Length: 375
Ligand SMILES: Cc1cc2nc3c(=O)[nH]c(=O)nc-3n(C[C@H](O)[C@H](O)[C@H](O)COP(=O)(O)O)c2cc1C
Image 1: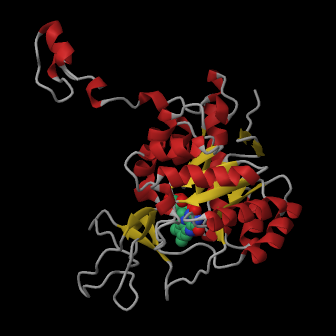
Image 2 (image 1 turned 180 degrees about the vertical axis):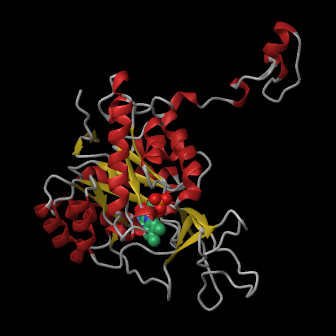
Image 3 (image 1 turned 120 degrees about the vertical axis):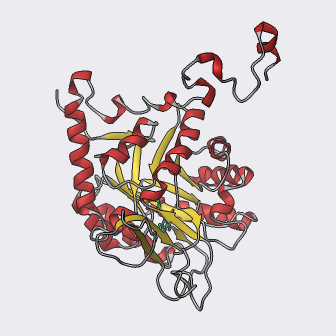
């Protein structure tokens, strides 16, 4: 039986389910061309907007590492330290829509069989902002983008009507998605912030607005650690810091939990998983929870900016997994997608030494009447 890396996700054919997420690896034409040469099945462009963008002075992103000897999590470079996470306060692309459009066209001409998704962002406070979403959507799809990813997730916007502030408001999630769907001829994905208690609520709102898929996670809101010697934040400007985003290995289990909340609530819908992926074992967790594609940022940033070795490992891992499981009749991602989604249950449904020991935290009450009394 031959194995097959290809997937169809929201009606789009991908040579493989591995994408570079919207971030520095996809911030330029040369990066995206190099990414496709390296074998990535798709890219999501760095988020494109219409409002003015100026980044902070100095570093926009850094990596935190730790060692088994000291368990100290720090941005300071130390020999033998392993990656813990990335931290960033980088805004969306500082290039204009007019800069992006000819580049999207040229990239699609060079690689017509690879998938380019345009990540876009505008405000949501009034009709003018909804029209901005529609303009971004129209222009990017006219330039050849195969899909649109709506950024409802950027964690460092002061504007109350932008980024993760949209992703925290189910009304705005629906309204913006609906506005984009009015003009979109290509699939629309919504990238949600993980900074909300019940992410399935916002996911449901996006689906009601017509979303074709939900993408999660963007980075988790966080601040850098404080240096014990200088008493300064490890990243700061003039001593000051503001909330930024955590990515990389540290967020893998957190992001999986968010994905499970959504994919269990909407088992028939499409999801793209992001967070802490650097090889196939992590991608597999997302796929087993129901994701049809996965995306990578931090690991690619650390591997020649676009992850040529990361994509090699992901592809080799998928091939080896399909080979190992050939006897089960699995020949493609679709054959095992979502098969562990139903293993997440209420605490009281997990087996105890004695089944009578635990009653969801309530007192044990004898007999039928007792069972009835429990909520
Ligand atoms: C420096 C940096 C810039 C980012 N910029 C964007 C962006 O413009 N739009 C977006 O949707 N996500 C952005 N992200 C989030 C990533 O796409 C991704 O969701 C997140 O880093 C988690 O994936 P990872 O664990 O593989 O890094 C950025 C992340 C980093 C580290």
